[in-house]
Image 1: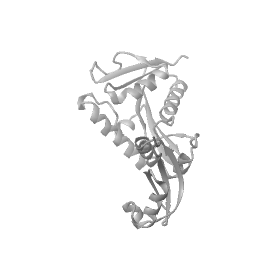
Image 2: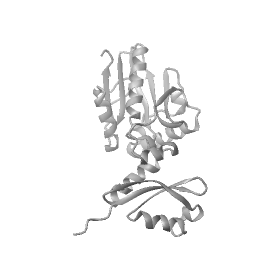
Image 3: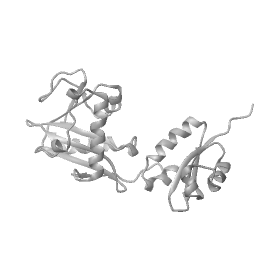
Image 4: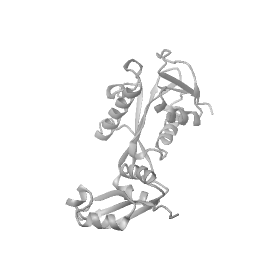
Length: 243
């Protein structure tokens, strides 16, 4: 039996300086198609000059998943990602950023996503005005000049802090952004003399990665705190900061 042909994820450099990504099971034929105007609509107007990089996958499904990830990388990281770079550029966490259009867009995406998984009365995510309120510290994370994520710390008084607005940009998922932001918030809370951190998040399956992240960092389930009440759409977690 003939072994199935591998699928290729490829990255082209086009005549106008742009890059184009796609998948195929015949790389040479696909490049010729792009070069002669028989490929994608984009490359008919912007013919390719060369193949910058390609990676092989055992089937179309895995190549499609990789294409999805590649297209969500910032341009500065696309080629390194294709070439198998394992160490992403350093993450810079800055205080503030609420006036930055990229931050505003990410926070709106966060609110929109919450609305997909919880009813309106059970959504406790802060909007821009809430994040600008006294007692709230907001942080944005950046990598190679691109927004990678955000988070906030709200001082609830009596040594008790609350995590808010934890969000990773889709282009930076599974690259350690959320873990770095969480570690930064915990260090900030300790530096400010807080003795406990708690959080409220959702109960839908979409929140499972967040639950796992918090559990890995020592958070355990708890009851409602502050002004929260029992809610079937809310999960509460907490941890002491004395260790």
